[in-house]
Image (tube, rainbow over all chains, first blue to last red; front, side, top):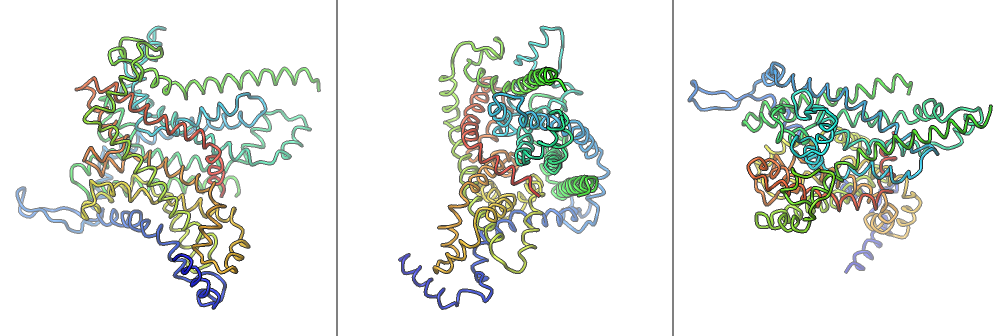
Length: 314
Length: 285
């Protein structure tokens, strides 16, 4: 049966009816290649984005006081005004900003140092180190947070026991520390991944580039900072943008830590706030929060790309 | 310039580099080592013995408890996870490959526009989609079914982006032309010529998408109420929240975490060369 089909196709092809004059495939064939991806993409990416936008401009009103029936109507920017007047929203943004300003540079600096070290002849056991750093990438955020929450727990943690033994009394889940305990989980999860992006970029630099510098007596240190880092700058920008996006989406790690710490509220991060609001059936407000988070994400990641590409003169 | 000073410098650098890397390796391994140790202990020893040293070896008993708890719900979660993440990534890779190949190899009007729209999708955070999807799915009755998690998971704009790059790099235009001259249809050319050449790239796309689904906690949490539909992550999260009332669940949370990450780590390490090709391509502009 397949044979008949292909023979038929061949006959049609040889008459030229299947081809456009330019030599490419027919529009129908192109549609058949593109649609299996594009249809779900429209349904599960574009439509929800449009739907969230639409919802965010609606408002629920009641007729005749507290016991009246409710109905949905156009509310203009009402939901957005509410978002911007919501102190919980601003404190979640403040928290995440503090988190990002500290955690992202620390993580990327460690990743860069590791990538540079793995690219020098100084180390042995390179593949062991590379695999070790990459391993956490296989662990989902929820499970990573569960693992670390046992290491933070005052009753079960061998770390707390160790620190107690040398006279320290750490409280990883205390009001001041818990944000940094969550930051540590993110750092543990993503350092190896970012390191591998930078390392792959380093590996694609031709060795001859360093030869001249080496002949001039430049140290490994100078070569690393003056030659390698500027060349892999686009990868560093990319990892930064990914990290900014990831930070703004933070949900699973603080949600798990919340199970053992009363110092994480249900509105700790913007996404937790959106979920909490949606759970209270206030979908229009939740949609507005989601839209604001998405806009902030876009502005920050594009802004950062712009800023760095201007600076580097790219 | 004297050679001994260079040697001394590099000797010192070698030691410093090794020390830094060892310290970091301990940091990355510590939670996993802790999990392995804790999974072998009886519940009672978790608090009473040091977390970094083995005590009574009870791993097999812990596994038995894990897989029999609540009528073996953990096994169910494992099967669900495979359905969502493995099958979802396989279907997703297939459709990404078709679309990326078409964007790379066919010339048609609107091609660049289509590609820009898809690239824009890379920047849309999946968590931002979960709540509106929930509303849409509850209107159509898909909410709280397998499809509620499976369908959105198969879409990966990043996969299409990678597939386009890889198709351009791995499939020579002349090969496609000669297949056409032989009278092969476009699908036949794709499956018999391009698919083989793109296989390493497809493994990379599959791995990326697998991780994205495996990591996506927000979507199943928003979509699913029925325990029997949970992936492992959501199930363990729920158990973890109950440990205050049922402390005996702790050991199952720990053992369950270990059981679910070990196979993934093993596969990742075995396939690590595919990661590097993908990450290198991903960082190209």
